[in-house]
Amino acid sequence: MKTDIYEATINTQYLSALINGHESGLDDDREDMQFMGWELSMYDTAKKDGAKNMCWEYEECYNYAKCDVTGLFCKVADVRLVAFF
Image (cartoon, rainbow, N blue to C red; front, top):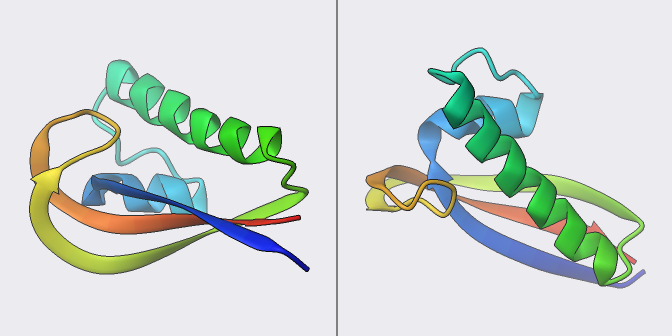
């Protein structure tokens, strides 16, 4: 089975929403919409490449860097969307 990995760096507050689907930790609707839009774009990219199944992995790095969702400098974690073809 072929796999491919799509990597991103996201604010640590998004981990619960990403891994568990639990979005109550997001502060407001705008933040929730930003996250959901980013997440869907990651899935769409993998699907366009032919992915049949996908799952998320993450590393708890907790460095300060630019978040790929918001573009803001914050405490982040490295995440990977693993796509199976």
